[in-house]
Structure formats: C-alpha cells, structure tokens
Image (cartoon, rainbow, N blue to C red; front, side):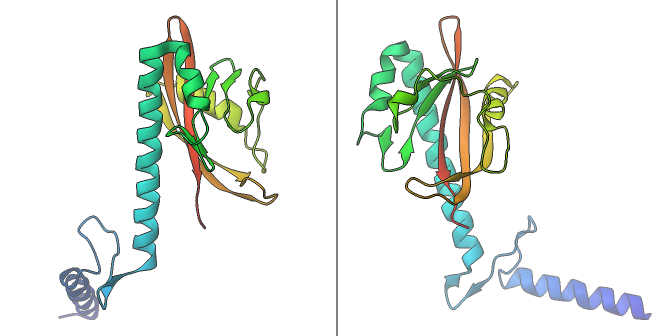
Length: 181
C-alpha cells in the first residue's frame, strides 16, 4: 500500500471511530459528548434554535391575529405584559411603505417612516425588512447590530419578518431577539 493510501485509510478509520463515538453526525456536524455533557456549541445552537422557533411562532400567531381581526388586533399587540409584549420581546408592525404602525416599546414612534432605518454599522435594515416582506417567500430573517434596551453598545439581533395583509394594505410583522455572543 502506498503512502497516500495509508494516510487516507487512517483518516477514514479516524472519521469512522469519531462517528461511532458520537462526535461526528452523518450530516457533517460535529457534536461530542464527554462525561454526559454536551459541548458549548451544541447548547448554543439549541438555545438559538429554540429562540428562532419561539420568534417564528409569535410572528405567525400575530399574523394570524391580524388576518382575523384586521387593525383591531393592533391594540392587543401593544398591551404590556401580554404574550405579544413583555420584557424586551415584542411584535412590531409596519406598512410596506415603511410607516411604523405598531411599536410597543415606544408608541410615540408609531406613524414614523422607518424605510431609511440603519443599524449601528450602517446596514439598511428598514429596506431589508420591507424587501423581506415583499419577497416571493414573504418571510425571512434579518440580522443586524442594535443596542439592547438600556445599553449603548450594539449587540447582534436576529429579527423574523413576515408579510400580512388587511384588505388591500400589505404589512410586515416582525419580532427579534438578541444573540448571546
């Protein structure tokens, strides 16, 4: 057996051994269990995944509420300490022309045109929110840097956007969460 074949055989046997011990999954992800504890990366991914699932479910539920009640749903979305608005979690609604119609953390910001909203690094998140809602899929994620409430330094935030309609008016419904880096 030639030298390259020996190296290839050793690598293949190592990969098979890692797969057998649970350190490499068939899809190529790397997960190792040591002393019955998962590594930090897996825990971070699980937490991120559950935050994503929760955010998507909240936006979907809000979109359904808007489809059912129309603009009469907006006061429900503003109600503090409700399923829609608690701590730093809330649902927001814009018209797709950029006019913010529901913004629970500061209702005085409602009625403002948010089209030119940019994140800390100048990323045009207002335009990205609108483009996401108007895309063929009608939904998607936008990530950007924004300060957490009460802070001045920006943190990574992921926001899920989904298109909704009331009559002939098209809206975007969104909610986001801060990613612990």
